[in-house]
Length: 502
Image 1 (cartoon, rainbow, N blue to C red):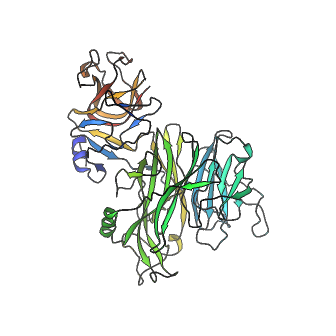
Image 2 (cartoon, rainbow, N blue to C red):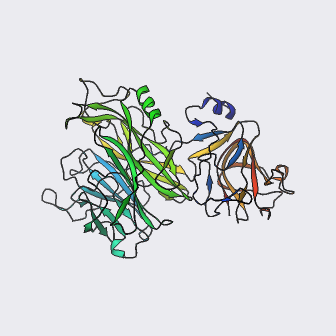
């Protein structure tokens, strides 16, 4: 069946977010000008539409959250004797010196400790090699790719391109919360114990924030009384002394209602992956729809259920806003797929050329992988079994640059008008996909009057699909000197993802 854009927008309620008029600020570089009440933009940053903080008005224009393009098959599977059928929790960084992708991952999540950390390399991020490192003995031989014989859990490895000491270019934390350092990601030495962490800390969000000049760790917070998973954020200037911010990011009563609708007891925030992105923090949160198995309140109690990843953002890496709660952006695969049981992130995403890449653990089974309640699965919407279903592998989710959220217009011209903005850029580009329609941009003064020579009628229509359409007026790309000004996007059959004033 074929839909027009108008019909698509009308019926796409499952992936669209209605206008809310929110005044949240996703760009920490903005500041209001008291004299004009204009918003100051940093021309080094592209402006996304995660909310309406920049928008004065939009009518019959739908905000749509876009799911990832998933690689159809796992990019890495367990195919070595020391790995078993389970490889999980990948951490991937791109080395600019060696021009390769590097991956650290855990073998056999369900094996008794110690669980080995293995290493792989790739020139394209899709096809991976597992080199014989000669470091760790396994059954009498060191011909394997085991890089660390003990567990480093869920993303506690990072490539620090800002490190002054080349011997500490790679950093990590081991299971005893000792700092680890490496010049190449393969040969590691242990350092001192870090402060400010506790044994229950967990989570994949470890990175260096150049703007803060601090290391950031978005990590697990636990309510031990019911074993509830939440998160909060720690900061460090030296990677050793950490200060945990007291704010807890936790599910709310709407999540409880969503869990009940799906037959689960509740939702936990299992883990988060975060990256500094265009002046704010972009993140993904794993939502765990769980039910309890075993005797509640005892060591025999554990949780089962599906896990899906949603999009979130923050101005400060502490207070998080979910873009579309309940709508996964990395959904589980169909029945029989390698990621049908759950999708779990364990690393910060990689911004690579014109795409954002995020590796994840995909499992055929759900979280408990074989646990049942009274002989039946804890949740009814998934296959659950033994053998082949007790497997995990590593998948890849991708988005084109900035294409997480769009503003969509149907087959009638619609308007999106920004609030007054001020900036020092001299040209405008937009990230847009236009199919059988057009986008034109009118520049207005602060009061909303079109600036002479920059009316919509003089705007050269933009068509086609590009991450950086150049906006011109009768062939002229230069912006006027008027500041502040408003942007009026006149759109038909178009999706607008971001704009850039440079």
